Length: 157
Ligand code: UDP
Ligand code: MG
Image (cartoon, rainbow, N blue to C red; front, side, top):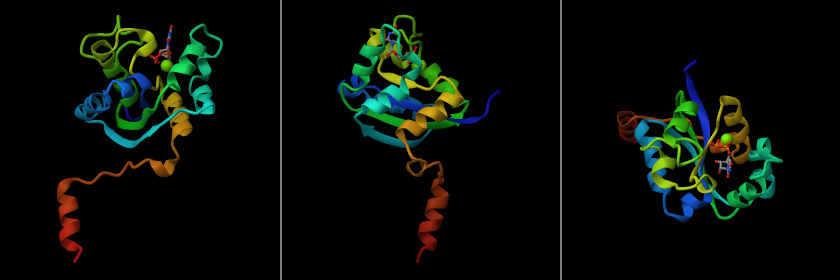
């Protein structure tokens, strides 16, 4: 079923280090999604373990935890119609070698271990992941169009 959704997106440490914040953010905005929360942070041990709980015990888990904490990330909440699947579509497959050309991972990454971006895989994961990184008071879902802003400005005095 398609509906208005919100999802958790992170530009991972390699994306931030390589100066790709603007490029990645631009793709979500150009799609028409709303960025309703945004911050740069270093992921704590607790956040890293909570975020990747489903991968605990897998061979790549220790390196994944080290990677996500290796430098600042840019965390965001992205909202739009069918946004969970749509963001993953824009991101491309986990392995950049298999990702479709035109997706973020195909265009900007070479290996799965440094694949630039994270996006939630379901509405349930999104709600769980958003809570790891944001309080509800840090999410700004309201948007006004220009005519509303101008009217408010002109009416103010
Ligand atoms: N990962 C890895 N090796 C693997 C599988 C995953 O390094 O064999 C890393 C990669 O950074 C990936 C993250 O672990 O983005 C989470 O894996 P998941 O299968 O959830 O992929 P995603 O949802 O990010 O596409
Ligand atoms: Mg995943």
